[in-house]
Structure formats: structure tokens, C-alpha cells
Length: 192
Image 1 (cartoon, rainbow, N blue to C red):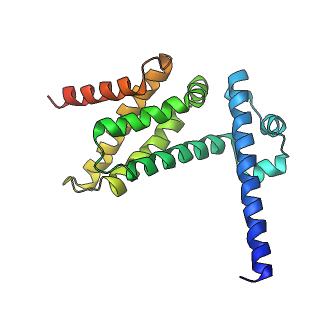
Image 2 (cartoon, helix red, strand yellow):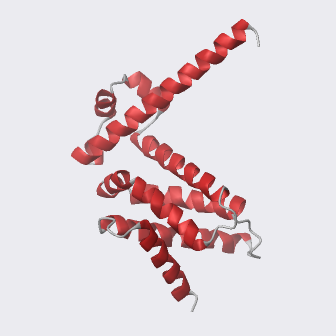
Image 3 (cartoon, rainbow, N blue to C red):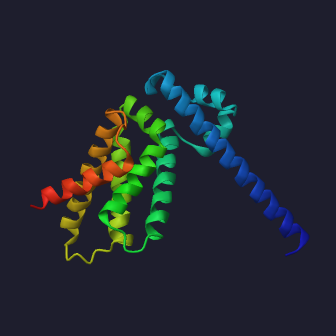
């Protein structure tokens, strides 16, 4: 690699680090604002000011407030996918436990999203996540036709996200382990 290429690489790396830091500041600002006022009342100017960035920097990274949350949920799900991929022969309990542990780590975000009545956004992200899991991780070797598989994805995503929603509403008092065990018990009772 010549000097010019090295400089270009270093500049790209610096820009990427700066963008990552800016995104984190913007996300944190939105989360703080969501705890202080309604989601509808929060403006882009409020977010940029709280994050200490210009509106131009904000719009370079995002188009809307929703984009901030969606990107953050996608990052959470990407982390979950990596954990699932690294767990050979994952059981339903282990799968549920990973999700509830990740939810507990993001308790503040989930409570803010629930308060803002943005449950549908979480559900849509969860549906995409379940679709990916069925298609790429667990495979579609269950002998289901595509339409049935599609309904299965929505059923699993809906059931899981509603249980998660109820857990958040109740203050997340139960441990992730207890929630995963409950999910396992619910699964057993549904198949009786």
C-alpha cells in the first residue's frame, strides 16, 4: 500500500469512527428526550441540540427520528444473530434467553419505546429478524410451503413481541432466565 492509499484508509477510518460516535450521541439524545417529552413533541432540532451536532450532521446520517430507533434495533438484532450463529445447536430456551437478556440490557430503550407507543416499530423489526432466522439460521427444511412459513414467522414474532411487551409493562421484574423458562412452558402448553 502506498502513502496515498494509507492516508485515504486512515481518513476513512477516522470518518467512520466520527460517524459512529455521532450516531451514538444522536441515539442517546433521542432516548433522553423520549424520557422527558412525548415522541411527537421531539424535533430534529431538539435531538441535534441535545446531541451537540448540527442538523446537517444529523441529516447526513438519518432521515427521521424513526430511522434512529430502527437502526438501533437493527444493531441489537445483528448482535443477537451473531450470538445465535455462535451457539451450535441452539435450543428454544437458549434462543429465548438470548432475546430476553438483550431486552434486559436495553430496558431503558424498550420502556421509552413503549411510553412513546411505538410498539409497531418493534414488531416490524422483530418480524424482519424472525424472517431472517427462519430463512438463514434455522433453514426452511421444516417442510412448510412459503405461505405457511410466512404465517409462522408472523405468529412467532407476534407471540414473542407481545410477551416482551407485557414484560416491559410489568417493569421487567422477572429475570431473563425466568422469562425464557415461561416461554418454554407456553410453547409446551400450546403443543398439547
